[in-house]
Image (cartoon, rainbow, N blue to C red):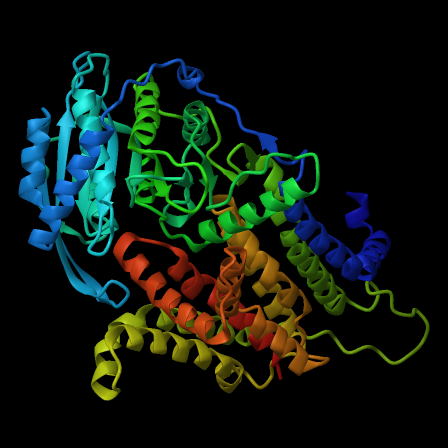
Length: 621
């Protein structure tokens, strides 16, 4: 305490912090980036292991042999679907009843906030069909779900055929202690969301749906299946859910274990897992997979039907069958046996999956990085903001101190003028205007789409995107608007106080985001922290302005799209990247209003106003 109460020691500490602030910031930023890149290398990456005792062994005998029956179901489903032009509800009901299930249907409808040009839909309506296999050895208190999403343009007939064949096989077994729900949804994720909301008796997205006539127990786990061919070369697993949620790691370990038992080739992000982690090639390949997962998780979109189950505390995965030019081929029997083994092990659960990790990143299916090992990467980046805020606070304190405390000369001389305090008017105006711009960015694009279509020859989706870009660009005029309403007596130190507030505001936002969605928090910190630390009204203003624009939230999104396609070995041209960027903007707004994705409101109401504060600091008069 003496160090802080003694004026002499406090001044010495302040001089030390001010002198070492720049090298400490550079060192902290470099350490954060280096720590993240090192996550794919041992010893930071660890081998996966099963934490749940009930699923610790794969000593179950899979007896599924209904490959031909699954193909027959798939052919009939595809034929009836071509005939009706929609989901063949009547055929599904008959078929599910014929295999001994309790069959129910649910109709739903949803008016989108604006037309989805990607799938060419606006007024969406459909019917979900589900059958329940009651557990013969227990009451209907717990259940498992096997779901197949069917969209207007999806070729998922083989998945429906395998689902029905598995239902027929499971019906003949007597060891089930949990109900099993076989769910076929229409309109992709919209049908899944409608069924989940009705099952849990809630409505969070404004979906109009009929109540469910049949229910099972509390859902413990779910698997979503996507197959486009009778023969697959590998099974790819998707783990990223809505708003970056991840399933319990034990469920992913269970999938990998049964793939290894059946000799199935399994992939993550479409990438094979490295075999040799002792050389450099293995970790470098793992780093590529880690970056792909980071970009996927940061988007906040559910990358499969499983992503919507996670919101309801249901551990879920999406399994996709990939048919490529690899040498080894697997039929539906091998896939069915892997699914049967997983359901039999999940049938042993006595409680929800909770013993393994919920926060992790994956460089490979057999390797993971836990939250305690990846959070330092974000912590080092956020430390830069803390150091810059501490520097500004000390500068403001020293400037506001009296002549004796500041170490002025004690000899005769002209008296120093009293330090002028920071006026609140110089901070209130940019804060209110920046938040108002963020609110306009969030509200006006959807509300004003009809006005835009009446005055300009554009469609509704184009009007939403163009309004977004117009409001975003209009924020660049914030300094001129703010200075019009600020007091003319604003002190010169006003920009320091404003930057101090902006640094704390940004640090709090990024810290909260990194705790729940590390990938999003890290990507935003890696791009926004350098510009936030360097922004200054004095110096090379055009250079700082260019840096701020290149690290803005919109530019970060554009750069992530190019990086994502580059990692997928499908690089984009500038024109293709711009079109993908516009589509991503429309999809982000649509996902927020349709499923409740939080990326759009976070950027519009949080990070964009904060970025405008730094823009205002740069052009402070």
